[in-house]
Picture 1 (tube, helix red, strand yellow):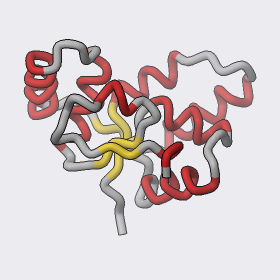
Picture 2 (cartoon, rainbow, N blue to C red):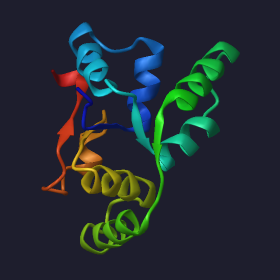
Picture 3 (cartoon, helix red, strand yellow):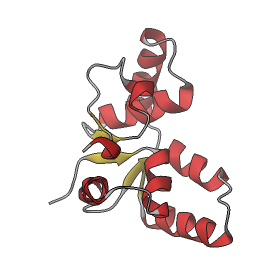
Length: 130
């Protein structure tokens, strides 16, 4: 069964670093069933990130190459605009990631719940708190 989850950038990093507790890892594992999904913004953020070791960068590149990258489309753009107008403190990258999750009716798996908590219709999962 394919999952309806989108991974935030920070979760991919924690997941690949093995920083999640076993229960959190299981929650993310369920989120990647059928292929890990993420916003194009997370792809950009991950590929701009400089992990401390070359092996980490190779792991990130491999994960991104195997992931399902959800591109910006008109629905996501319009939802992003609405989010930025109604939630003034949300940063543009976070608004795009949230809009992507909303448009795909997906749960956003993130460590940064507070960045998204004002968006009541957005379903969130923090794998550090499961």
